[in-house]
Length: 122
Image (cartoon, rainbow, N blue to C red; front, side, top):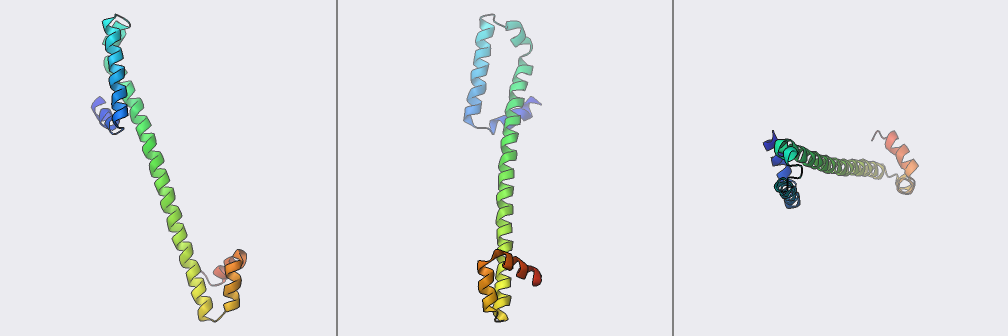
């Protein structure tokens, strides 16, 4: 299980890899100096697992945020395209019916434009 977590951890970049090496180095020095030697030796796998789990969770949160932002941007882009299509259709209908005054007013008055979009079923 730690192996799968370490693969996710490695996706986090060189800085995170260096951080784990520093932690391991500190642990090794503590063991050499008999500081927390028993705990660090017996629970080494658990400590490493906790570190990797924290790193994995941080990485997953970064991914979620990135995907959320991408989804939001895509949604806004699609919404803008649809709105532009609706307005172009309205403009074409008004031009084809030679309603130039309505077209002019709709381009200056958003509420009137909304009314026309509704009237034309767009």
